[in-house]
Length: 594
Image (cartoon, rainbow, N blue to C red; front, top):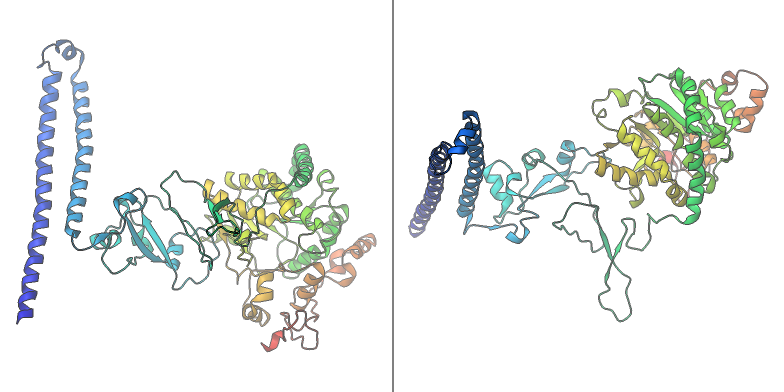
């Protein structure tokens, strides 16, 4: 009985408090209404009396002002009053709402943080990325959440219950909302990405004009110093002290200046020559662009042979040959080719022995120049490395898929998740560029960052940093494709399930890119056992020149209609079991017995 009495008494007190709050709110609104009506009446009377000469000494002003001018001044004063009254009403409502919460819960943020935040909400990461697709590689983020920080009251959710839960700590934690509800009143949304770390990592929000992220690391332990001081470092400095984004040294600039000078001096002539060569290309479709030297010509020939065997249209493909021999081979294969002696004569003709060696680095810069040429000539571009084989038509996808048409640049997923390629992790061996001022500026900037390409031995890394910067500064829209549909070397070496499905015909991607592989020799062997090789042995590299000199039909002599399958390693993915072959990697077992 006593419990029931207490419950009834509590209910009466709650109802009384609620009525009291509602009464305060009504009184506030009534007061405002009276103020507003009195204010406008005062304006009308006061202004007309003033403007009509009811004050001493105003006869001259009355004669100078027409009726239209008087009405305009009245309208202006009324508008100022309306704006002021709206603010008064808004503050009254917020204060009344705040009073209702007094004694029940505390604000999540004190008044000292009003410039930074007034509330918090959570939303699911998958839901958030569905609503705000800023291009990062997608995976299943089940169970992961995004935190939304509200900067002021007008950005809070619409629903009063949600608004209170976001602003006040009611003991139930940070409220979980849908991405749409959480951001319904956000006129601007700033997305800041950060990843989990085993290290003692902190994030500070400072009420200052917005700018780039500043990074501070504690210095290495100092003898006798218990707490070493912080030092400001670059974004590329890891906790182990290794710097992924170091400034180039003088020799890198010397090499870059030489190649950049050739580009600038030759542009006028190149433009005239390309205008003639590219007349055969259809500007309404993306131009598939490849760059190749003699050392990689076998991979180029294989791409063309494979595409022809599957009936793909190659009329909008152009090869930028960096030597005369590759130009002859490409012409023998029946594709459009351009060779500019001034820009390419000094480049090596041999193949890169390993990833990142001097030949590799020089060819990386050569892959930037033709893209700038084509973009300045108003082409949309699909750039791809020569170690790519098509399964399906992916080129038209960039123009027809409604999920992709709003993006400026679209990349294959590299598979790496290291800091040097963060946050997009795009692979520079296959990507689409939609011609517009943002993309022209992006790749022109990449061209001018040649010293970094030389120093870092990777134009993919330099391009990745520029994607991050241009996405933030210019609103460049970047998209990374889903890995299973556009697989590469990462998947070949690390995704046994996907490669099994491809080998067994259960999954058909758009293409395959043999990246993540040490050198050309390994690429050829892996492609042969995956059923991706279509070039006859007697047409590889320099042997192809002999075929051309014989004046035979290069395509019928060198290209196979069916894949030339051969086994090399039993532990690597293959379209047929290679159980009798040796292993490539130590400790690995037969691919087909996993």
